[in-house]
Length: 520
Image (tube, rainbow, N blue to C red):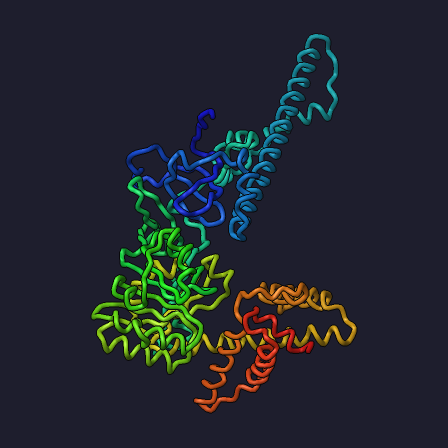
């Protein structure tokens, strides 16, 4: 195979660590960023993510010759968005080249006309031929076409011509001109302040740089430090529970370069992650003993308490300084109990339930709601960046559980209402697809609405969020309302519909299977 010669400006596919090949462009690195020693590498800006990395030359392939191959092996939504970004840029660049070409032709025509008129003038001097008035006026008034303003996205006139050959993009990047397209948002909410004024957004964009030593560092560009550096925590991470949510979280922690030890009640689920580089813990207690920070994500309050208080449980591994992060959706009373027993042994505790679905977990796009030990929240920053797009710190223990139950109460009630509307449309002779099309063109349009309705219309109830779990969340939210004497009649009605769906053996299907409660 002939060697491929690359240079700054070339469009490429770059492979970094466990990440799939990603479309990018070779650019000049910031002046203050040193090139890694060892093998030859290029500094690449990736489309769609705004990430930047030093990539070894053997991990780079030209964009166009390998485009079809890469599209076949990568099917993720974010990957497709990145490819679309490249194609959109190519389209714009080609348009600029055409405009430049037309401008050049126009200029040549002007020069040719001017030369023709000048020649006729010279001839007129010799043979006394008259000039047409419009030609004489045009020659005096016609000037050079105004030069177009230089486009910052096309700094080199020749780059568009090279782009047509399929090797180069004209995308300019400067380290001190950060585009506002954050990868991760951090929100700190002080309970002593008014909510309307208490959010402090810190927008961070990750730039993963693989050193020739094999280690990985992550640069965070934010409003205060464009070239600031964040590395995956050097703390040893434990993770308990590899269900729909936990599996995606662990996968993203590993991709980001964290050292992770896993445990699951069904041990076979650990095998895939061991192959990806995770370590295996035999019991929850052993994982906590081996790790500095241990996360857990299980199904309900009973499972969360059994994991901590049961035989060979978390509590047996807790020693002063050990950290425990409860990511399960549970009630405030359960999380308060877990916090108390962990801290009584000298441990540090944070609750951090996640809002999202299996797909969002796989994509690293969850929303994390945290409360408890503020310092531990900050220590978990790189982990939260790996697993989610946004995190909120909500103050004291219990606040995150309350907020999560309210969110899931609304989501569960909404899903039940959608299912009710679909069935009513059907029994009144209306098209369910038309009903969905109308909804998706109005103010209620959302990816959640579209996805769940499509599930119903296709009869596809593969779980993205278990029906039994959303019913559990509704039940806990209703109980929370009762504890403060606040009525929740809508949630109570939705809860009854989910209970009927469970009775129809829909527990392990997606929450959208609540639809079946209306048709039986």
